[in-house]
Image (cartoon, rainbow, N blue to C red; front, side, top):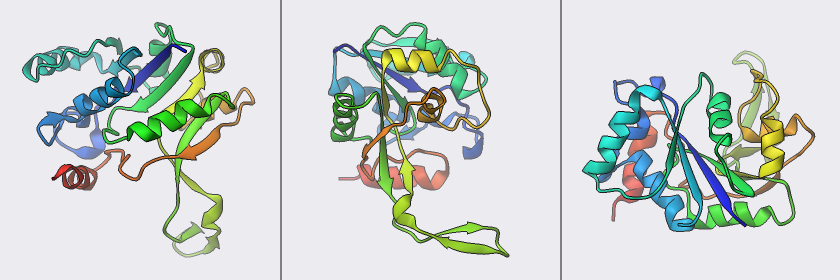
Length: 220
């Protein structure tokens, strides 16, 4: 089946500090977003690759592609006000029967994780990669809390994969503040996801410590 892969990089990374959005920070010898783009091209060079970017950073991205000699075919769409709107913009040009959506700042997703997500679409209309919790979990406030059974909770990763028709239908509805990922959008139309195992290196860069960990993981 034809695959469309949306790589979301529409944010400007305010939590990281600094002027350069986190998707453009160097990780090893290349910017983070280039690592991510290459990972999905390696998985399936025939897939339609779409990258959402802040409009003001498109020229900078094109300059990076030249500087690092990146010739991977992909399409660009403007990032929206919210991630939801970025995905809507990308869906308008998707031509695949199956659609994956991945955070551009998760550069070390494994090929095995990507494969498990698409494989899950053989039996489910929506698939989400997760990891079980390792730490104990408490719910409440600093003053009043209670222990929670961690075996009932998971860390949610990307890529999240969907039948194209299901995802398109879900995104025809309006944005709601409680949407935290694409699976939560699809759940609004009654479709619950199949959970599959992610890889621990599939870290989302949200702080400087995340970037340091990924640097360490890339060291030989």
